[in-house]
Image 1 (spheres, rainbow, N blue to C red):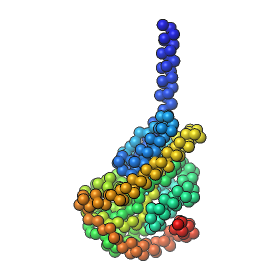
Image 2: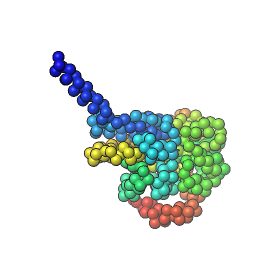
Image 3: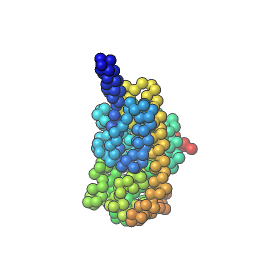
Image 4: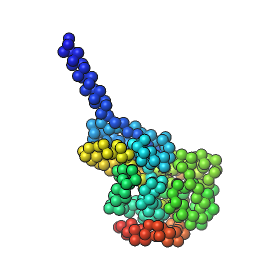
Length: 322
Ligand code: PAF
């Protein structure tokens, strides 16, 4: 009898120790769980849970349930939230060195952008985040941004002239977009659908996966494949989580982040390949052959300002990656 009691007590102790050893981490992102951010975050979380034998797992907060990207980054910095998968839109306000990657028409295509972000330049940028109280695990992806609006088809830069467009809270974007004649209206993402619905702004710009998952076809008639800027994204973790990981667990997190990034980029590719047909089916009028040269020509004068802020050599170094 006594032995049975002792056995039960030992088993209960073991169970509670195991339960106590589990850390549930909050991860948030702006779009749905089935979107590119959801696919990438789920792949990361599954790998972390598997690699740590369930000692670490995630609770996911999609659809900006914990606030916009600025709030998410702030919360990770403060340690009140554990993880976030965010674009660089607001990140430059925390880590100024990041701003350079938001220059319009800096990257030629996906292959170029991914090579830069995964190469020495991008990896150095991830390290710069540590000094600002943010641990950057891997570059995920939001995608090349395109313009939507409720007024007219945009075939060339002059068609964008005078449109009131919601932009991210990002000065590098805003300076560039002004050269297209757009009236940039910075706004946090959670407010955008209502602003478009109520006509507070005429349009917005985002990659296909965002336009699809946010169902912007319900509130925007025109889509133009302007590809005017690449929107990188990053998986970040709070230092109070990272610093208590042992070396083996750090490796699990880093490898999981790479797998998450690969899954997220694959979803971006899939949405780029299939999403336009879907948006047309939903009633959007799509300009696929935009005059890109007219946009590049319009933005050229802004490059003098970018060169002053970031260094012409640094911009050229990114552009010259083949
Ligand atoms: O437009 C934005 O704010 C971003 O692209 C979004 C939708 C939050 C995804 O990172």
